[in-house]
Length: 202
Image 1: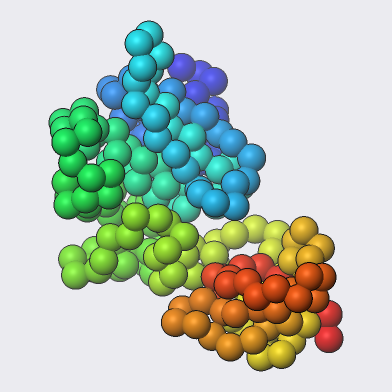
Image 2: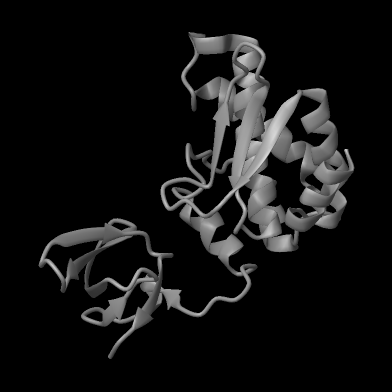
């Protein structure tokens, strides 16, 4: 119990700790904190045999992002418990459960105004991935710590930049909400999120 609370204290807004702890205990969920994964911020695995249901979340997320990813995965657990494989993973049943969780925690004691107003918008679209919700991702990014780079959307077209891994690219045209970029290492085209953190070289 104490170890779990300490873990939550290191990753959540202060006033959400008890609420999340209660959900973990109530649903018999094993919470795992992982290193940063580029492809996803969190993951859910249903209970198997003697193993409890598992939620894993990137440990590098800021407290608000961590909480929202937890709710995303908790909605998967609640949906699975009710419907098993009879509904789509990100179908209307899951969206309904996630909206309900958002409504329960939409408090100014937990979230800053910009995130809170977004959660309270009943007409907003519910995305299957936190990375895909660019508006929310852009808002959450403001609360990240130790940002050394800048977002790719904020640099001019034709700027040469490198990624955190050291790969070099040239920013090209925008494609819907993402950006075409030319790799200077292999001359291939890549598509990047507008919020990718990059380091301009010119």
